[in-house]
Amino acid sequence: SQCMMLSGNLATRSPRPTIDEPGVLTLGRTRGVAEHFSALLAKLVRTDVALEANSYTDAYMQNEDSALYRAIFIVIDSPQALEDNLALVENLRKDNFKPLICAVITGRGAFNKIKYYLAGADFCIKINTLSDDGAESLGEFFSSEEWQRDINLTLDPTRICLLSTNKRLDISFAEMKILEAFAHSNNHILSHDEIANIMGLNPNFYDPRALEKSISRLRGKIKDVYGTNAIQSIRGYGYRLVRGLISTA
Image: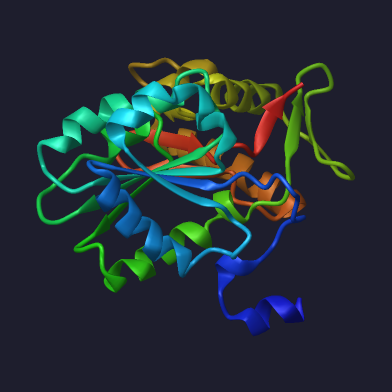
């Protein structure tokens, strides 16, 4: 649409603005760190998205509120905080499938993205400093399928299909089982072996290419009908389902 192009900023696209549009929470080692990062986000999100900032320690106390947010950013600005924050991600994700969780890692040093995905994070973004050079990587978050998404699909296991408000996609029984397993797992991730198991392949002898082909066929079907990339590859591990896209009837 024209107005979207004029704004020149993907994050400004407004899916059905509602009075109670859930906001964005930033957690940092200190409140100051979180507020600094929040100021960076303010340049990227629509003005009607409420931004809040807090320190990690307070977040542990307020876990019951985390469902209120559409996205939670965790700013990790020291190497020793990498391990501690895995626990924080797990804690925020517990019983709580709604918000997108994004780990923002600043400074040098390697980190293991897969660990964060498995803990329940949806994104890991690496930026050098909390100054403006982070805006580009953060822009990727706000232009992502997860943030922009305005479609919700329901998996109907009795009719073996995916449903949106006006379209239906028939899928195979194996595809339904795979989507169901994705949707029911806390982190929306399945390893190659788990998928092989669901497909009834021998876990010791299956051909990884056959598995890849099946997943890309399923991904393609969903994209053709609903225009969205539902399944993402995690190199060297398996696949993940975009959070919040598919719920089970």
